[in-house]
Length: 428
Ligand code: CMC
Image (cartoon, rainbow, N blue to C red):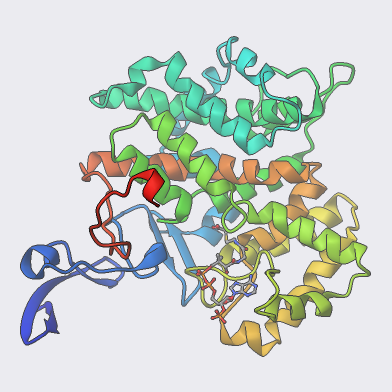
């Protein structure tokens, strides 16, 4: 029996190989279809198109499974830490104790950034959205480390760029916040761990001693793990496609940050809180907003609901919902917005519109509530997502390079005018 799929069109038959992944996912390989038949395939939004073979993250949207390198997200969120998960994603295996120490020490040593980067930061007005500042500062690393522009960098040089990215991103993220506040920046403290250092750079004031709250630090670390990778989503595909032109890793990650920014992707965490706040300000009537979300003539969408891939539940949302409850109770905070979120979730999960379309809360629905409780302002939420997603972007960029993937260049079906002669302006 042939393992090929068959496509028949206008009396001709084309054989297309079927490839199978380690979790038995099957894909029809259409790479040679155009050569055989002159036809391409079309799939706006790549809803049913695999762009690569990847060994990093497995996701089963029907069963709500998410695994990094084979390890379940629940297991990692409970037992690991963000730097260990980063090592796993980037290098493929969990580190030994000495590998972990070397990795984390190297990152700690590179947290400081070139002083001239502050001049770039100073050029941004304080109204600048921190995501724009972050992507610009990350891209500026191409200027400070021009060697990274060489597509023939050795593995060692690439490793150094990776360490720099992991080390400097929290510094840039905290500085983007300080710019917004109009406060002087804090420099990294290499005596602290990854999350502790980030929090100190964010929140320490020159006049006060800053104490790290272990509840906040742990919650932050867990949130970063939950965001660390999510296979070929919009920003990750952007990182891979920019990197496929052999652009520098810094330019590729900067592009990923920009792709993440939009409200349909990572920007949803900011939009969720803004939505919950406006429901609260409007009297807290969640049913009214549910009706608006269902009305096709109303542009309103229930932010934090629905996912391109998860059609059962988003396993990250389950963990985050529980974490939101835990963090708020440990910190002794009562947030009325959490109650509105829960009401909205219950109402949506019992409404045929959402049930029929398999629309469930996604990772962004409850994460903003935790960020608020940790004292992180709303327009920094997507920056927090970017901080978490960084090791995933790096791992995906590295895999794309190691597999020598060709430049990403989709085709199109042209639907514009056919050939016509130029008409001089005075004759139009
Ligand atoms: N509120 C109301 N209706 C919705 C929503 C929503 N949040 N999401 C999807 N729908 C409807 C949509 O109108 C469509 O209905 P119909 O079949 O009647 O035309 C149906 O559900 C399918 O939606 P779609 O837009 O075709 O699905 P998609 O896979 O293209 O979009 C999505 C996925 C995440 C962009 C979308 O669900 C959405 O806009 N959600 C709100 C934004 C959001 O929370 N984004 C964060 C995603 S998770 C974090 C990340 O990794 O990016």
